[in-house]
Length: 147
Image (cartoon, helix red, strand yellow):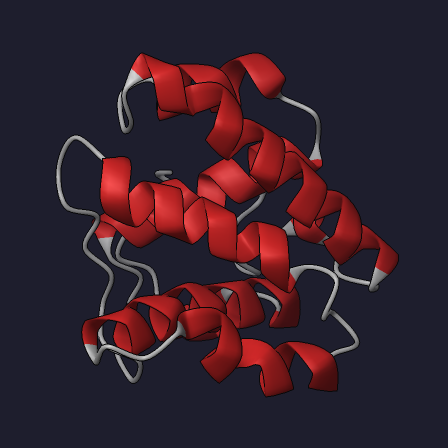
């Protein structure tokens, strides 16, 4: 999380920017009363990532409905990565590199215990679909940070 918080969006690689845009877009569509999956479908298809969308939608829906506190994402055009966005980007990266225990531990602070497995499984399926679509989900990292 601390790799991402309050960093400029421009420091994310292209895959990280797309994922951040998708999360913000999902929240923006839902707030307007539109179906996020339908609204984001074209963009995902444009990146040959339409197989990602169903599980991505499940993840975002569960986080939206079941989080112990409201998950706050920045507006679409915001040029900095907000706190909850940083946490989610770190979660996606951890899923991508197989840090299952980290993912479940973090999720246990975000959603009720009975929802952790569902979110983790949907994230895992979405991450696998991202990899197939050519996204380096496990490599999401701000470009200017040394590991």
